[in-house]
Structure formats: C-alpha cells, structure tokens
Amino acid sequence: MRHANGKMRLLPLVAATYFMVAGGPYGLEDILGDAGYARALLLLLVVPLIWSLPTALMVGELASALPQEGGYYCWVRRALGGFWGFQEAWLSLAASIFDMAIYPVLFVTYLARVAPSLTAGARGTLWALAVVALCTLWNLRGARSVGEGSVAMMAVLLAPFAVLVAVALWNILFAHSAPAAPQALAGRLTRSFALLRAPIAAPSFAAAVSITLWNYMGWDNASTVAQEVEDPQRNYPRAMLVSAALVALTYIVPLAAVGLAGVPADRFSTGAWTDAARFIAGPGRVGSALVLAVVAGGMLNGGGMFNALMLSYARVPYALAQDGLLPHFLTRTTRATPARAPVPWASVLVCAAAWALALRLSFERLISIDLVLYGASLLLEFVALAVLRVREPALPRPFRIPGGLPAAIAAGVGPAALIAFALYAARQERVGPLPALAFAAIIAAAGPLAWLLARLGAPRS
Image 1 (cartoon, rainbow, N blue to C red):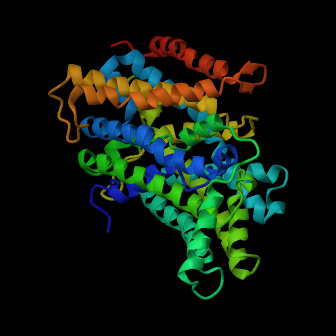
Image 2: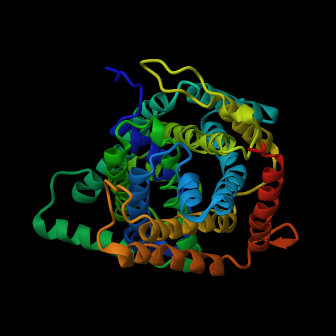
C-alpha cells in the first residue's frame, strides 16, 4: 500500500542507491584482467573500508542533517558559500555528460549479444534513445516509482548471479557426481583456492585500483532527492550502510565463485560474465538459459543505472534554478498528489535531452575523467562536513560520524589518498591530443567562468 505522502521508503532508497553505485557485478571484468583473482578480491574487500564506508558515513551525516532537494550542492553551498556550491554542481553535471550516455549504449551492447540484427547500424541508436525516453517517462512518475522499480530490477538482475554462484559451488564440491570423501573434497578445495592465486599475463595493479574506485563511486547521488524520501533523517544513514554492504557482497561473492570454479582470469573482459555462465553451467539448456539471464541482467544494468542516476542528476539543475543560477523555467514541477511527490519535470526533460544528444559522441569511458570530476566534488563534500562541524556545532544531526571533529576530518583522508593514487596511475591516458587529466582539468576550470555567467544572468534582488 502506498503511503499518503507518496515518498520513497527505505528499501526503494537502498535499491536506487545500489543502481547509482553498482547495478550488479557488471563492470568488474577488467579488474580481473589487470590484477588476477587474488588481488581483485583483495581490492574489492579493502577499498570499501577506506573509500565506500567513509563516504557513506559522510553522506549519512549530511543528508540527515540537511535533507534538501539538491543534496550535495546544498551542503557545500551552506558550508563554503554560493561559489563553491556552484562548483560542486558544475563538477557533477559535467561528469554526467561523459557518464550518462554510456548506460543506454551498454543496454544496446548486451541486447546485441542475443539479437544482433536488432541493433545493427542506426537501430542501435534508436534503442538507446528508447532507453532514454522510457527512463524519462519513468522519472516523471516520481522518486517513489523509480525506487520501487529499482527494487524489482535489482531482484531480477541479481537472480542469475545467485544461480551462477550456486552452480559454481555445486561443481566445486561435487564435480557433477556423488559427494566426495573428505580427503578428495579437501583436495578439490585446495586446487580451487590455488586457481585464485594463478598469475595473469599482463598485470596492472594501478589500473585495477582505478577501476575498483570507479565501481564503488556514487554514494552521494541519492542525496539530491532528500525531500522526496520518507523520514530522511532516519533512512539515509541506514540506506547508505546497507547499500554499501550490499554492493561489496554482490561484487565479491560472484567473483570468488567463478574463480574457485576455474574460470581463467585472462578470459575476463567487458561482457565476460556470459562466458563465465557458459563455462560453469555448460552448453546444455541450463547453461543457455543462464547465459540469456546474464545478458538480460546486463540490459537491466544499463537501463536501471540510467534510470536511477537520472533521478539524482535532474534535481541539481532544479536546485540551481531555485537559487536563481539557472533559468526559472527549471523550477517547474508536477502537482503533488496523495500518492506522488512533486517532480521537477522541466529539469528532467532538459537533462534527458542533453544526454540523448551525447549518445552519438565518441567518448569512451575514461576512468581518469570521472575520477577528476567526481573526486573533486567528493573532496568538497568532505570539506563541507568538517566546516559545518566547526561553524554549526548545534546543527541537529540525527546521525553523526562518531569521534568528533578529528574523526570527521579523518574520514576524508582515505578517499583523498585513493583519488591521488588513481590520478597518478592514469597520467598516461589521453583524449585525442590532450592528456585525459588535462582535459578533465580544463572542464573543471571552466566552473568559475560558468559561475560568473550564472551570476550575470541571475535576477537582481
């Protein structure tokens, strides 16, 4: 039964956050190719402790203290002033141009694995546009609808991986035969664990770290819809911690299972989960069905992440427009009803149009660009956390990072160190004639100019 206020409850908030960050184990494949199973699993275990957990705690404190539409933009604006708040919004929206066009294309990529004729030539672009259009209509139904849809998509997406893990464990323990004697079973397990330590042909630990960070990015995205969440002071901290654990679990368990089952790490690249399903389940009906389910999950990964991230990003122009920094048109919302909170429909449509226009751009997912733009915005949020502790000690904080001001400052140290390492590791990447880091830095440096233009166009009070 729907609540009378039409707002998103805890489980939909967890599911939406899950899609804003992960969208399932898809995207982990290249970590294996760069690090092998043992190091990949170590990274997936350690990085959440020094990256995801501090970020989730920071989001939990600020989102519960300042549950405003616009989320991280509002936090930084309150702590550091309008200029830095605008830079926070600029960095996030600029990153979305490079990020959001990827997900409809990912949907098409997985569709092509089962129906290549449907995606040939311009048909692929039409499918991608259809994903944008469908998610736009879905978002116009409100945050609650997106959250509840994310719950269903998460269950469907993760179901084939649950089967994959079960079949892998069955093969490891029983090898398609009757239960083995204890000594034989111990020998199988020893051989399986030895497979996890097998070397790979061309290791690149630094690249694996960058990809791991990218796969754990986005915890602050859910903050922008705070006014559309039921009891945000209570639900945000819980949602951050639950979704952080869920993301880590659904990354580590499938990867460990396919490694123990003997799938070679060198065979893993983007889209290789289908090969892993075929390797583990075999060529029969069960294997074919599992491959199709994994492919369908990949399509849901692209569509679900685009849908949830549209919910997040579309609230940022709306908040900027409310502050007079973007055209007033973007403040228009749907009418509130007992079953549905108001939706900033104008901002949703403008964002959807911008991402649709970017579909044909030849941008590849350069992780260094994402890390520069997202990393800079994340560090501003950690600065805002510390500044608000100093300037507004009496601000009601239903959830607070334990340990006082030193703990609030220390929370940002791990993420800052990982961002610095990843940027150093990506120093050789390029976008055309420019180093990728320089390209991203130019985009970030354009923020102050955009601020001046926004101020010139702002109405005089």
